[in-house]
Image (cartoon, rainbow, N blue to C red; front, top):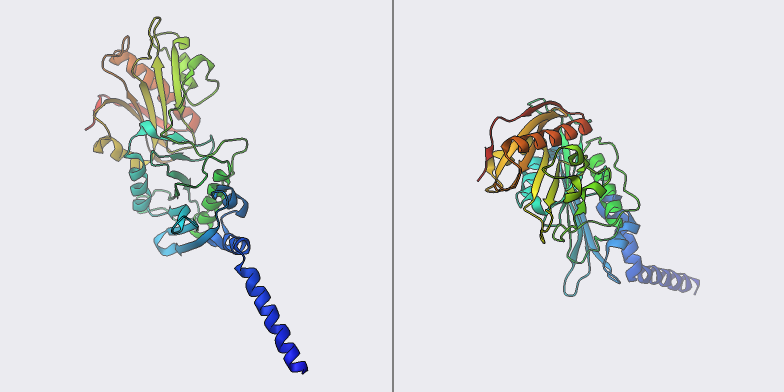
Length: 345
């Protein structure tokens, strides 16, 4: 009799535990606990998930010999699981440069900056890229210090407009760095910021003389064709990021609409050499180059040929002011104004 009682009690416990694990919220807790090898903060994952959605699965893989780490988390959808967040991290030179070029080939006009201090940007496809140095990995055959690129994609229903997106991304970048032996200094999530910007949303320009101490503030003293009060700027500059952009618009007295944009772009890393040779548009560019962290850096000005009061000499003076500001901010050397326009396309 006692034996049957023990068997019955044991069976009841097993069924009870099994039923507990079968509860949706318990499954969520268990899945998120191990997501991306424990690198994804559970609170951030829940903040990014659609309302009342349960987690469907997670998968991760470390290919350290190839310099690659992957992880993906999905949530339940209407008919099948849908992506919440996916990370692809690379330390191999070809993979890093290839992924960056893919992100920027869509054009700089629709890129968006992440908060200052984070080494990344958002592409027009709403992917986010973060590039960090890897001091613990050996230099490549050309003597260059390796870097790790963390490339994020998000599902259509992921709530990326919440600040938790940075908490999740920063934690996953730090985790991937550890798993690939990169040794990057840990990133810190910004506080008091909104979520990931949408590059397709038109960013409202601000008047230049009211722009504050931003990455585009250099233009206030650069000698623009008219007073700073007549210029507005769309600031997509982050001095820690591999790319950035300042786009200025001039509104002359009596004009209803601002003129064509005057755009300054900064590109950092040897991979950006290909941006000049492959041609991302049919515009005519003035360029300057420098050395930043042992690699090439390019500073580019694109302007309408008919821009009033802005001949080639004036454009070169403005580009020089822009490049000097960026060189000083990032500790670059060997600034050189290129002798001719770079023709792309």
